[in-house]
Length: 210
Image (cartoon, rainbow, N blue to C red; front, side):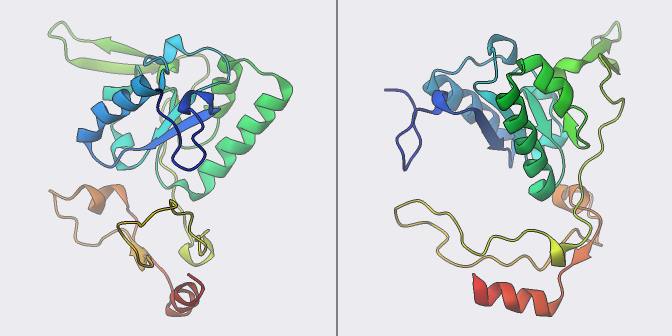
């Protein structure tokens, strides 16, 4: 049996887009295993058309190269705004009958999106990476997305949960993002900068509504 969605039992290979949040490097093999169980081609170059577009985000997306052959594009940084922009563009592409390549060219124009297939890697004689050169109009540098104002950022108060008992059966409130400490061992301390805080009034309202 192919891998399917929990509630609807829809096979994963029937979805238009398949997205992964990569929280740590040990999840790399899980991503490939899930695609394999779903019957979705592992390599991005083997997936044709607008069906099964695979993209990924999360803190490990800041080092996308280990998965570059398998992921169509990466979303770098905070996802509240960029996810909506990506989905709106996909809806347009599907309605207008775009090719996959046309969609990837347009999604690469969204700030914070990295399309690995639009870059050429150059190596030194000893095999180390010398340079990454953009192709086909892709940006030379991709900058992570940042939500400047947490008080007015989207916050889900009606959470979508599985139709079963969940592990973290509690409300989650985000007090702030980023950290002023700068500990060298801490990934989140650097990837989540700059420091931004929510006001007590907003936190109280979100706690009541959640």
